[in-house]
Image 1: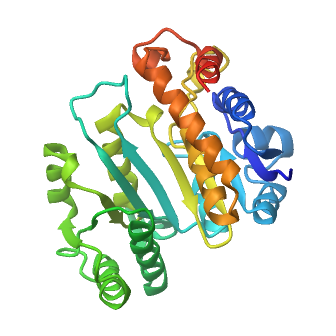
Image 2: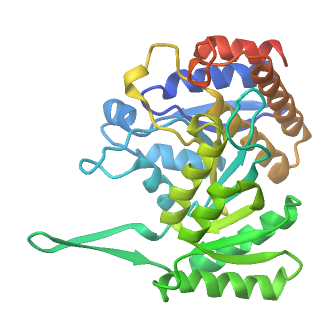
Image 3: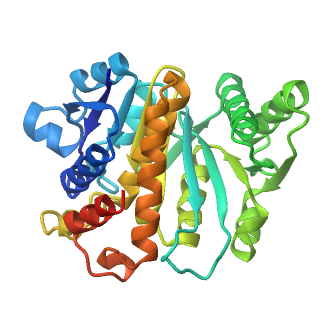
Length: 340
């Protein structure tokens, strides 16, 4: 039987450990995958002399799909984000972040099941900054009709395809009438033309944050521009236990990268205590994407088995230390494998 070739970018810090644990679980589940290993981030700098080698980009373009561990990004200095470069160079224009409560991971919220969709290529993350005179810096926010329309169309199609219930666009168009107004106008146009059956609302982002922390179960699918989406997706992760228990994907028309959205945690690298769950959950998303886009039911079956196995492990209190358990990285992977 044929296997799907998937580019594996292990990343930095704890990346190789959580990637290794994820590979072990997927192999035990019989996922029909063949790995093509490439580098990005500090590891790539050490190995290849570049943060994002062209051979890594070429491999993702060739195979159309990748699984990526965390890559280090310096704060306030140093090199630009490898994650941002990957999204821009490969035109991965929508970030998908599902947020749901997990069994065995108690939080102050229950019944959370929402998805944050984020425009991934422009906004303030375009990185157009200038020091116009000493002590004065400007940062340019970019919004185009093309990008706002395609992410809106993708979002409405996602709601319909996945049987979701409602889409909420969060914005600050009361102040940024042109840039945030652009995504509102495009979302309304797409909704009215092709998705009028999909319930739709618009919420100012600061008021939306208040409503989210009051009761996140009132929301279903959120659509936001780049910066708001980055902030809100991490906020929502806090509802269910943090960045260690949520998956992520960056998807375009030609390629998709599935990734752990937490940091590289260099302070615990090599200690076998990192939680591999976020990357494992992202791998489940990847398998379901392969099932949808390539019509391979084996991928869906493997995804369902892995998801059921880690849910059961968590429910039965086999967890890593960050979730109040006692297991290390490899031991947690073994616990999931035992339940496949």
